[in-house]
Length: 473
Image 1 (tube, rainbow, N blue to C red):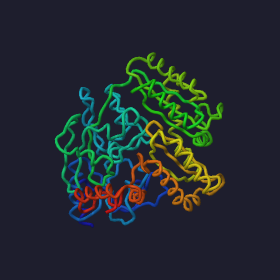
Image 2: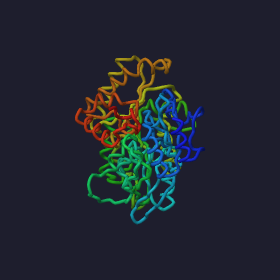
Image 3: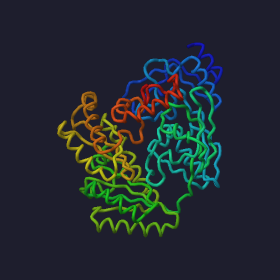
Image 4: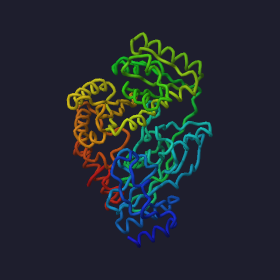
């Protein structure tokens, strides 16, 4: 492999081929409780041509490649295995915003661009790039597309897939496909971008993308509500669609147990209504309007009045300014941090048809409580699009590490079987990675698996693109 490393050093510069010790930042999964991998090298190309040259060199020697953006994966999708044979191809240096086209309402940017930087660039141009995630300060647009990331504004704007107009991709053979034209209508053959979006780097390496932009909203209103049941939270969602129409941007569901962890571990954050109301569930709802703040507030207040009259909410607080709205969102985005401080836990990123979420939660909560006395369920997520982060914490006083080691497989089986029973998906927005390959084989249909493997073998016959992630051949 020394010859390969020499070629790579000549291609990208010796300072950008990292070997030996000290590679933990690239070899360790973001959650840092999974086994650390071992890379042959970390290679950091500066542009698309260098990415293509690296891929050609690796193809010539049969060396597997693990593409990596911000390394915020939650499913071991962007870290090397323990073999020491895989190259980690970091796209961090491909971070340029190539163009913003205000008339086409689009932005072309490189895969290593941090999501927050993309949002700020659009804002400076007087436009909105609506993809928003808790990890937006470190995740990258290429990774967002590779996993078809969702986030908090899917209700209105859709996942990363819906926001993408075109891609630039380096194929497993080291060729470059330029599909960055930014067209909204193009029926000239197969829409290749959809093969690569959500493929988790197993079919090629996304190096740039053209993404949709939107006009900045004239008004944005945010409310925090206490709701008596999940059924009423779903009813509130229906009322929100009726009263707000396309202005409904997001509706987040949070269980009381999740917010109590925030109050316990992050006491500087005030959790609205938690102390005042005994409600088991809370909702964070956001509305944007293209007209005026008065118009938006009138519609918002009409929604709240209808929800109170229907018994969908016990009480609600409407943010009086942007600072208070950001505080509401900070509480919501801090649930994962608070849960991590509580101890190791078993995470599930699932999607359920919205109308079936109440029955799923009641059914699965009961199964877990019967299986493990005192188990704690930390349930929160994007109710507006049916995506729950249905996490399981050890009983109070139990060792979280022992709980994880002894119960993870059993709990996963209970949860995933219930997800299948209710017509859902075991992976909503975090991706399959290496962590859920067995679940894909178990719960995906044989026909679908056959089609996926045929595509993989056709595009990557050497199986060098992120092998062992998402799909096993």
